[in-house]
Length: 316
Ligand code: CP
Ligand code: NVA
Image (cartoon, rainbow, N blue to C red; front, side, top):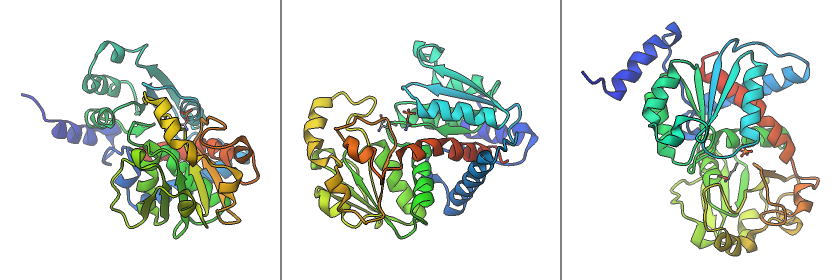
């Protein structure tokens, strides 16, 4: 008899390492309540302070993390791999080219097989549906390491980095400038979850997302979005998988973050960028290397925040 995916997952939940807890996936920020998200950020702060003091508690000893990359990565790969290692676990890295995914093995079968070896899976893929299927069919926690639709680990890190440099994000204003992409979607989710204002400036042709949240505005007017903001953030104009680079660059040219744009923001405003950047496209080198830029702290913080996410997924 065929067991439905739901029943399969329920069975997996009860069998999961003998624990009674429900399997915990981290697929999107808006799946979680504020208390859970706050708990993760608090833990990240503790882990960061501990690491700086030379502490590397082996809280995930012998935990096997699988990482599937269907797109390129520098930060996500290295921060997860180093993170699990610092916690006492191990990482297995696969790409579509060097696994059977590239030869058409289904994500459902892959999920079932990998669940027999691994304790947790992180995936970077194209379709959000692939992530959701993986989570549905895996009986171990699944973490979203970026899809075409969202990048929650990055935006959790961006909120953490904002709070490190500026203070509590609730009630503040973040200006998103440029393409409306997976990062923008996760910022929208975060605005609702953490209670801040997100002001998006984007050309009409690329402002594809429908926004019904009272916390989010979209305008074509760059100055309107940035004026007085507590942070300005942007991302590459051509995301992985986009195949209309020239069109995007032409549409986005008026949305470059320059020193003049930064000067419209609040005096204490910081500049965030998830990286990788294309200098002199979405932001000038002078902004990226300027006094308000916290982009390398932001990159480092991926490590601390993802360690906290992995611990939350495993109920540790
Ligand atoms: N920001 C980010 O996810 O970087 P990578 O693509 O290098 O992982
Ligand atoms: N929007 C970018 C983010 C890279 C971390 C992309 O999807 O390529």
